[in-house]
Length: 283
Image (tube, rainbow, N blue to C red; front, side):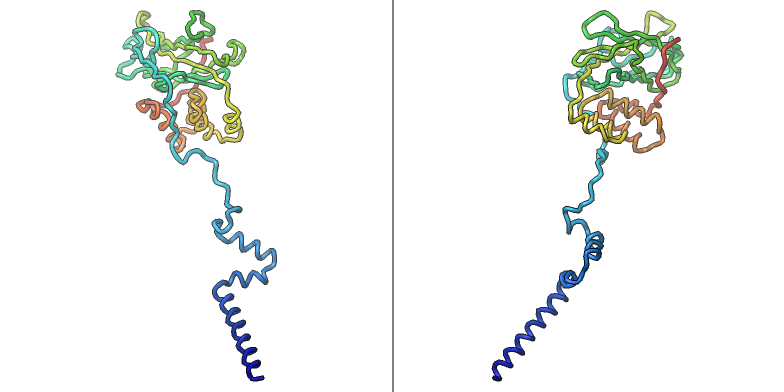
């Protein structure tokens, strides 16, 4: 009889010890017995997400943790002087055009080919030194052919800066064909007609992949440039970022993207030049 009483007493002490250990060492476990659903939900919200991996906050889709850089894979583009027709991507504007500096006219192109677009009517960008020329001539033709499929004379701003030459989508120029190579030429019309500086470049239109289309669909304007760069689509990358930079020249993030992109293709010497509005055809 004494033994039974002692056993019961010992069992009670053990139970009390376990209860004290549970509530002191694992308070939330003990408290969980009495938490209702609303209290439990509130506790989960205030608890770091590492405790609930399935409730982690979705990460930002921005692509700008690092700088925008264009992949320079492909065939190295041959740089030639403007005095030897073909392949000229930079040219000295002569004094007869009012250029008193050593600055050159430069086509904004990567150092490798092909140079691609997914647009039916892409935009070409050219950097001009300060000059007094009033007009320039632009024309487009299929690579390897002499027939010009589009030509126009444009008014020049006279200031030093980067100008945009958009291919028109008003019916005067058919959409560029997928898989076909084109070349474009940009001549500055100087008083000395025997020395007209020019630059030229290549365009290949490609069909965007389903993955590229899906990425672009919900992308922010700034992210679109990074997506195009990652896909190796030069003209669309450059023009989308140029439009942003032109509309927000004091935005330090966009300015940094612009400088990073040009630096990645060896055009860092003109990355600080102002972007002038698109030049217009002479009426």
